[in-house]
Amino acid sequence: MPVIIVESNKISLDKKREYVKALTKITAEAYDLPESTVTVLIKELKDENIGVSGQLLSEIE
Image 1 (cartoon, rainbow, N blue to C red):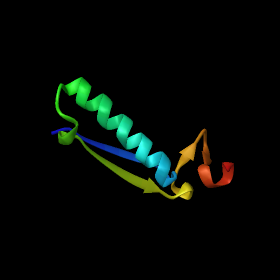
Image 2 (cartoon, rainbow, N blue to C red):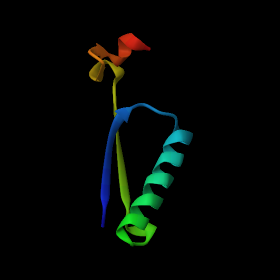
Image 3 (cartoon, helix red, strand yellow):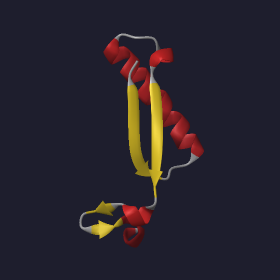
């Protein structure tokens, strides 16, 4: 049973739905398993806790 853990900044519920669906599909295909065996966990981080190119994401946006 594959478990995918994604740590990311916040995204909309609609985008999360699309992302989880796509990750589930490709993972099930790669492992040759039914989609029902794939679990996706999304951990949303605050922008102030993410650094990109030497800057906090909260200061870039």
